[in-house]
Image (cartoon, rainbow, N blue to C red; front, top):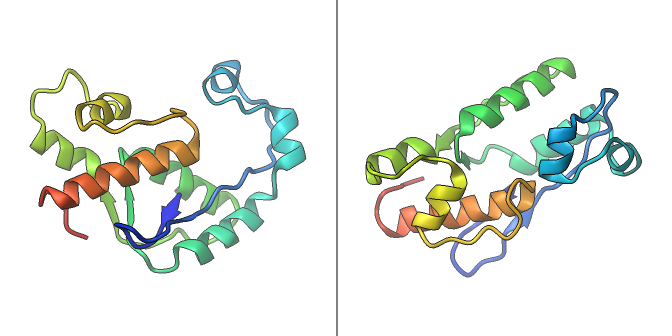
Length: 148
């Protein structure tokens, strides 16, 4: 996830791996390149990562694409860790895109980014997806389609 002022200012990044007890499905390993060995050697506990994430986001507005998908994972993680679910204001770019671009073939992130001329060097990698989503939000702000 990325946070920070836009335009020419630097963006702070948050990227952590979480140790897991279950097996990473083969389809997810292929899609993301993440394996159990990697996660368990490089990862931190869920509780520790969630604490760091809460500090990182503070009370900032969270902006994402198809945000309900991510929000369901975050909520489940906070519940599993016996922590309060975050209450930050959230803005999902997907409905804005659907209103602005009514005739796209589909509304997958890759399709939308291509339509807006935004490159995502490593699709399905969290930082790369977050940076591409930031670029999309900035374009929407520039085009007066989004206000935060």
